[in-house]
Length: 369
Image 1 (cartoon, helix red, strand yellow):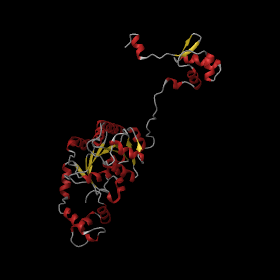
Image 2 (cartoon, rainbow, N blue to C red):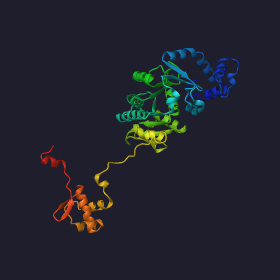
Image 3 (tube, rainbow, N blue to C red):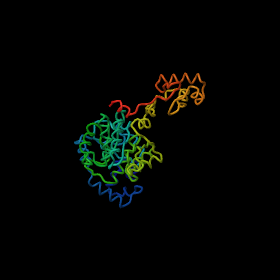
Image 4 (tube, rainbow, N blue to C red):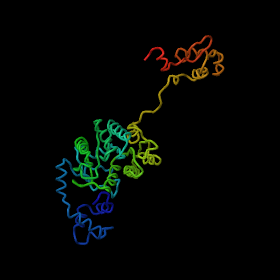
């Protein structure tokens, strides 16, 4: 069966693997009794069944240092069961890590293949930041955002997992053969298709549902309106997973799909800390964000009013300042001396004026650098 075959998944659930295979290959009329089976479909299944050699596939994945994991195995990630009858019949896995344990604390980072330098930078930073916080970074090993996220996690010495739309022994794209090899050594490479199977457009789309179901949330970094990354995000939403997007320039077509996602139920994130706060456990909070603290921010309310009461140019006496600040003359004078000690104001004859701040040109006139 092809990945995501809902009818086949229902038959598998109702009959079990052994009985379903018997019915499809037997000529006793039992296959025709399956609900939804047609002569055309049955002919297609039988044509494919003729070339099935499970022992050959298991030997091939073992030779590549992998294994086959199916529902009911200890290593099976039970969150994939949320896909119902479209869940994978099993997963081919390369890598030493435990798939179930890694998937428990994982986040998907997906996006455009032809991403901008900004998109590559953000994906790399997210991959590294999530890995440093103990999260497994999941993506599809494609060019662009996927590859950048994987590399970011590996550069941080963290964990990353690639979900392929082909056999796990196939390096696709070929330009990422070294990257996929590194992930097989340091992380995990998984897929639904048996060894040597090639990718197709539909398999890429169906692969995305596995990424969405496997992880706690999906972050989209740059995506056009028709991007496959949005398919992953929408599937994550349907499954009740967190869906996040990294904003880009309003004029960028590569960010248009992300912005549309954010106009709906997507959550805007800008770094790994914000992602971890959303998908993480209690206490995994992003640091509070604020602008720089300026010296005058530390003044009390009366000091601020007295400072604001001084003219921008020239000087004013204490009574004028008190009148403008709405304080008594004595209070204003006390605050003026306080401001003088802090360097905000200076005496000028009988009055007070704002301290003149040096400029770049002042340094040049004094012979400074």
